[in-house]
Image (cartoon, rainbow, N blue to C red; front, side):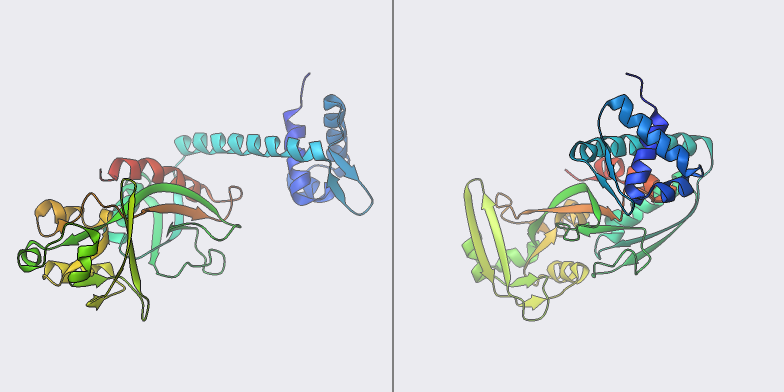
Length: 299
């Protein structure tokens, strides 16, 4: 059976636009050609893909399944074409990126700088915000988000996982009460990341044992840079993302405590609005992030 790949691409356009005439307009061919191509495709497959009426189109059950295969195939073809274009032409333009606080210095800015070394004519604007920005309303091309994605209209690609760790300074631990079990944390000064009036609970797991500790904060700050400063000054014990404090641990300025008790993993994803109709620069940046983070990610 010989299939017309152009007809398959037209079929995808018809389904997406929900109209033969709109698909014809976007592709730049007569509507009669679109209709004929779809009919020939159905005949070659010996199936009915679309139910037609004077007012609307409806996919048949098997047409819906076939559409998903065709759509993915077309996306792969377009991705391959972008790859060729990337190798044959210079990349220039702009990219608007949003990201959460605290990751800018250790991860995001180095990643963006590495991307610009490869594509020096791409201008990038980074907006650091605790708020999950609306990609369309706020004019954001791509964003980095921590945790699970709640908006089903967006697409998230996980680029790494990391966990928070408990840390303190050597000076604090010299005079502090003993610390061998999570319950001992109740006898210590605690610095937490939290908003007003929000209680802090640390869930710690050691193999098959799990302890939940509601800690009483002596100091609460909703900024990890401030928390790290307080810890270095001997203000107590804090929970900090492992990826932002590796250099401090290696230098001995702070130490990890209760290392056999683990806090839950945290997911970091790159989020964008659609697999289709995104700019070439956005696609290149997305494809760049995953291998870059894998090379950078601390053990």
